[in-house]
Image 1 (cartoon, rainbow, N blue to C red):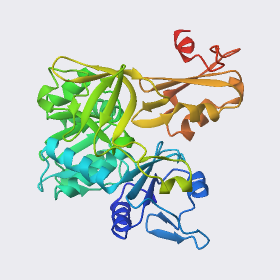
Image 2 (image 1 turned 120 degrees about the horizontal axis):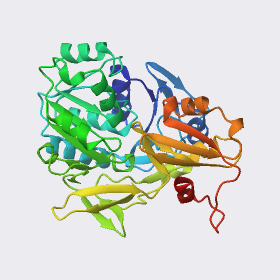
Image 3 (image 1 turned 90 degrees about the vertical axis):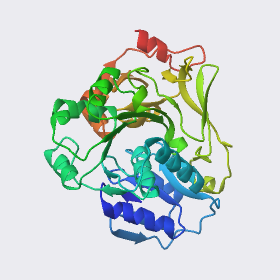
Image 4 (image 1 turned 45 degrees about the vertical axis):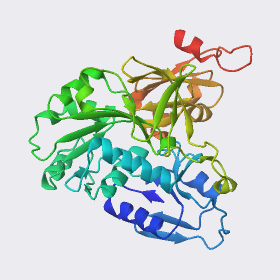
Amino acid sequence: MRCGPDAASAIGYLAALSAGHAVILLEAAADPAQVLERYDPRYVVSGRDVEVREDAAPAALHPSLRVLLSTSGSTGSPKLVRLTEENLLSNAAAIVEYLALDGGERAIASLPIPYSYGLSVLHSHLLAGASIAFTEHSVIRPEFWEDARRHAATSFAGVPYAYAMLERIGMRDMELPALRTLTQAGGRMDPQMALRFAADRPLTVMYGQTEAAPRIAYLPAQRLAQKPGSIGIAIPGGELSVVEGELVYRGPNVMLGYAESRADLARGDDQLGVLSTGDLGHVDDDGFFFVTGRAKRIAKVFGQRINLDEIEAAIDGPAGAVAGEDLIDVFAERADATDARALAARFRLPPRALRLHPVERLPVKASGKVDYGALVDG
């Protein structure tokens, strides 16, 4: 199912779940070709249009499987995260609890439904008996905030890049009398920026991964000033720890596992409630966690999960991609054969988020793998 930022997409998604289907969610702009080829779904839904694929064979599905999210929703990556109803409901219930959501809340839809953060906003508000106000406008457009005022939105959810843009356009000075709560996830937010926004309204900084449906930890708004840069504590019902320098999460919201083909949709629970996050970090004496780096080849840039290996695969010739904060540096032996702007557009990134560097030869380790540390140090 390809979802736009609209009520029709949300209703279609909920209707598909209600009818007992397992749903693959992709952003409206994503290319679904690889997903269609690998998973051969019976129905393809785009907005109000439904295509019935008569030649699709009956699929063997795990009985608990309900939602499949791309590991990179903006590109339509065929690698999917397999989520159950328990994963989704337990996570939504935890969010309802720590944000104290009730029927009086109304979120303004600022994030795509196939993006796990956006999906969690939808789930948690509906579980709380609250509502969602949809708008077709970008968060940096005046019309978005006019819609927020008109619908009396009480909360806004954004990634760090969105908050950076909102600071530039003066959102903090806007008259938004109903807006009383801010949340942030999708990557590290500058602590000083977080404090500036928190000076006007409570801001809850959150941490998660699609593999955890998605929320893992949150920093209570009242602790933001005392714990700048922290991802906070584990969500209700979950447990977070540091194992050999890596953050490891346990909870009922952990996915069944990944899928890379139709046959994987019948697989059982590969994770058994345990998720090695791929993030390096530590915990302080008060039990608050901090992320210090990445152990895996997945980066969050401008709120998007980007597979660095996919970027390398899109380049003609040997290449190495290294992510910084809202920036990806690509080192390529045949850089002249790559259009940097086109590459950024392919992954739905702003042009300035991707820098291309020509190199005569990539540094490699004894194993023959790219030495990414040498690229960074160089």
